[in-house]
Length: 143
Length: 143
Length: 143
Length: 143
Image (cartoon, rainbow over all chains, first blue to last red):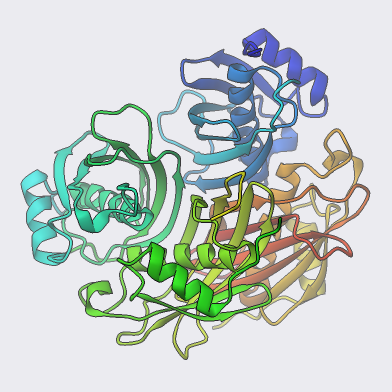
């Protein structure tokens, strides 16, 4: 039987239940036709000297964005795992602003999902980073 | 002095002059606000057994698309070179169709340009491949 | 029943049977403990203006190297397909020399294979390019 | 005047001075002929449910490894920044073990540095992850 996808409330609840360590870092803003929009609630612990968000934090934002986009289609596939991420860092994030990520799923196959994530400082047009990610989806898709 | 960018005719002429070996493979369809649209004029020599376009041909399409997108902004920067390409192959191209690539430039800095390329079989919505590329731009930008 | 891997003669015969268009471009030099060594027999058709090997040709060399490395372990898995390649171009190849690629397999799982390819101009220590590739391996592994 | 590279003590001091938030996470083990060996001192905050190290933590290990490898050659180039990382996750890390990363620099050019990082659970041969990274190096190399 096909599993129902998750909406904003479902994704938020999943994050709180399964990833309590990081669920305060991220806020699910919207489930879109192609994926999801996720906010990094920028805090002191995400910053590098100079006040900009660290690379690992941006990687984490891209990774969680792709994961939540998959869950928004397939439901709680708790065991989906990242197999590859290629990320380009293009501009310094603006100090003191949240980051907004926009994930689009390009392929949602039986065993692999592929998508892109665009990351911007809130309110800015220019990209801070972009990433493409591949997730392996386990054979049985129940959570 | 800023160099003027190239339009479809200028890009086509540049391709014929500088890359005579491959200029019959590619047709510049459009210069867009964000980049360019380039067609692979699929021919026997691009195919693998089974009639689908080969991976190296799709790589070549992504690479030329990014290159032409840079030229469409900066003019004939003959010495711009690819430093990185990450490409995902997602679906088999449809046999007997041209491929259409759509390049968007995300960053055009003083020394690096970064962009994405989406590749589809003509007339199809689903992506065949996607690539992100980085080019190094030489200090003096004259052709 | 486990399929036997292929040695240099087996890989060469496979290339000739399945990829007649490109089998003259590549020579299988050695099956190593970790993968394979494959030579690009550089010819006019591989070159860019200036006499250096083109990017798509280097991509093709990396791709065939990873494919042959998989066949050298699993036997003729004709349907293995590239899902991702991230390639860095670091130096111009030396004009007039063959390229030597060295593939190491890092993971050979049930459904995915991951490896690295290092590419050098013959006789040179410095890397011309490096690539990492992922292949999807079909469920039944018979050729 | 050429800047002297940093040894293990110099790299450790640099990390403590410039990255106080993360300097307890990483221990510089060795400066090698080709790069550096850096340990992730695995702690509760790096783990995902199930006890394995999180993806963002492995990204951070790869990123710091490449950065320290550059500093070990060029001295304290505080402004070198990551422009691209392509990372493959291949196996779950062993629970309760440190991770050992091994960085090899492939190119150290005037404006770009490129290298590979291999990550293993301590004492294990199989790779947990591999990454390739590009750093942009600022024109003046003084710290």
